[in-house]
Length: 118
Image (cartoon, rainbow, N blue to C red; front, side, top):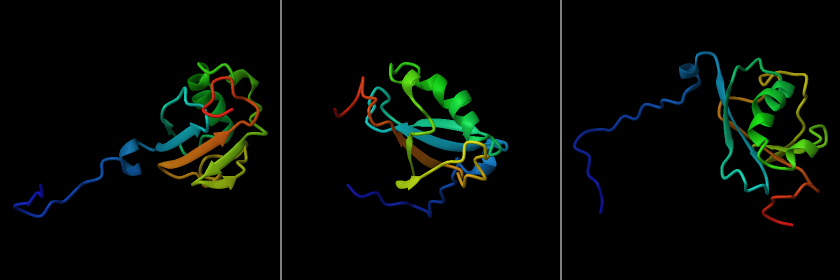
């Protein structure tokens, strides 16, 4: 059934970067590991290095998967915006061109203890 508005609707986005007190949102997902049903949503300062994103924010969240300890982060295959991408672990999110609400996906070929495909 169609809805008819009585007046013009003006939506206000509440997830703008200005509303996060100097931080930004970054989505990260592990392809083919369905133990995690959705991407992780991380709220980080843009000055966070990519290595810190991995060590401080992401690794603790991944501990439930038995493959986590075997991940070699330097050989992980990354996608940013569904395009192949290679991060610089020593650079910040900003310097790696990771913006507010960007999605990063990674895959770990050969690590499939709990995996969607074999």
